[in-house]
Image (tube, rainbow, N blue to C red; front, side):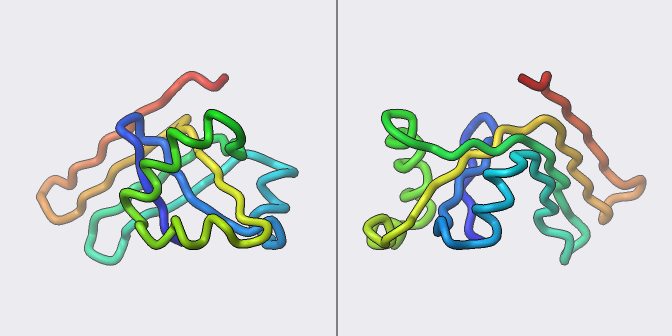
Length: 110
C-alpha cells in the first residue's frame, strides 16, 4: 500500500470503495500499522482514519500526489476514495545502535 505522510505524521492513501480495507475503515476507523522492519528500523503507528471529502480532500491530495504522481490518473477511477489517518501513538525503533534507539510519542485522542 502506498502512503504519503504529512508534516504532522498523518498518513494519506487511496483505495477503492469496493475493497475490504474500505469496508473495514468505514465500520471501525482505528488503525494499526507497522512500517519498515526489514532493516532493523521500524515504525509502529496507531491512529484514527477519516475518509476525505470536499475541501478537506484537496489539501491532502497535493501531499499524496507529490509522493505518487500517477495517483492523478487513478483519481478518475470509479469508486476511488482517499483516507487520512491521524496518529494517536507512535513507536520508532532502530536496533542497529547499541543500545537500541526506541522513541514513543502519544497524541490526545479526539
